[in-house]
Image (tube, rainbow, N blue to C red):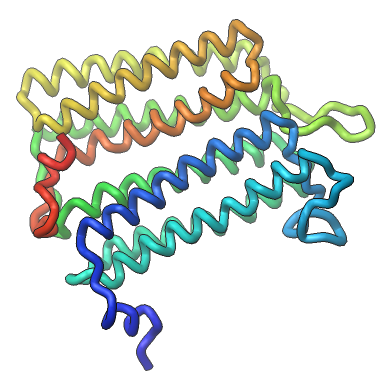
Length: 320
């Protein structure tokens, strides 16, 4: 018996450009869901829906008595379906394209299961009263989704041949070191958040929501140290890639990463010295997501894959 995917593939043959647009839509929605999740916490709406998977014990949707916090939390939950629709489009486009890009289909399904698992983690955050460690895992899982979405979007412009390095091996390893340090930077940011000013909801019975029992200033300093290290590595990568005449796309991506890192650093310092106002924290979360995505794109520009789709320009030109 043939699957519905196979039957659809007999009738619809999207172009490589359509597949790439679908992958980009999934990536954009993965960034949006991080930002809206931050908005839930910054508006103290983390417990706007008091349980999960329902919004209340008796209702799937927020009730008028729950006010704006219930609407905000429920809206963020509903955006998960929009994200799933974007990922579904990417999966179908990859499956129905000719030739069938099995690697893209697998990446699409990986995104879907990351969304499903993170929805469960989100439910656990509600059921545990916004435990800061669970909230941190929720954020890390969202960044994992961004990782796979970036990879899917980049791979949609490449072929399925074996990767070939366009720079010497040590430079490629430097790019992975840069990604690792920025990953640690994002992880440290989740701990700062867990010990910081915005727990996500007012405490029950007048008690504050439990926070990570670590010194906030020390965590913020460690976070800043990793930021300085990230900027230093990015500056080094800019000069080294220019010296070895790396592909223009790679040099452009490292410069973009450096700019995003510097802007994010400014936001971080302003946020710290202004006692973390909600708008600044929200912008910083967006910046963290964009920084992570920019870092992930650097090593992908340092190698090529053969058999690029015929109706797209070569990866080097497309990403220049």
